[in-house]
Length: 372
Ligand code: GLY
Image (cartoon, rainbow, N blue to C red; front, side, top):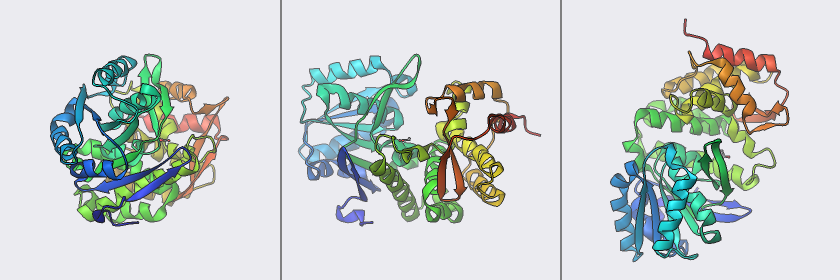
């Protein structure tokens, strides 16, 4: 990997539809203007953000863009998943048109996953495509959603039902933004990062075991390394299977089958996404072990890591029947079988569709059973 301080990106994603640099730095937002110019991105720049993020970072971004001689306009949506709607996309199109956004302009998504999805979707569709830069300000958005070009809005009928694969032209992750996140939001992001180690990179996974205290304290060097390596794993998977047609990108769904079921059963109200994924990863470890894949010791080892990062590994009190119903509805189910991602060992994942229904059901019931 290249040293980011000399101006080089942390890494470059070379997906079939686009090649783009990824910067992972303490202070990336203060350099974003120069980085846009280096990437041949032009102004005016249309920065889309939410009400929580805007007051913290819009000033810094405006200054950085101004320093690079780039004209900028700012648009803020209310914080929260409800903003990821077609109605909001419509208002954003109108605002872009009013402020003369052209094909050669640049949209910057400054925020967490919601902003990245909404602004990315609008960028994919306005004028049939305007360049978008992802500037994630949550750990979850850094290690997962900012890379890979999945953009979407929600419909009343379900989440992410309207969207597009539309790769960003640059990703700028400013690690200083992590300092303002709550411990729950951080834990939720760590769950996705730990997942990347579990599915593909045992040496990254070991850093979570060995450096938990330093990571919880956001020690600069190890935080930068772990976030960068986790983002690079996401980038590599996207290079290999941009549109999730070859099974490779499906590996990113480790823990998500039960995780999505838990989120839906609780109406997206009580568990953060990464918390639900953490419970899902703990549960699916048991399934993998019962099916003769991963050893119990390894499952217990990584469950201890999840706990160490303050993550839940069970969901007592959630209605298992609702979880199972939601899992059956999940769009990742192919035909009548669910594609489960299982671990053969830490760092090696496989997709299996032969998990017996009664094993899945017993596992969900165990996860949801009240604590002793
Ligand atoms: N978050 C999973 C993916 O981007 O494919």
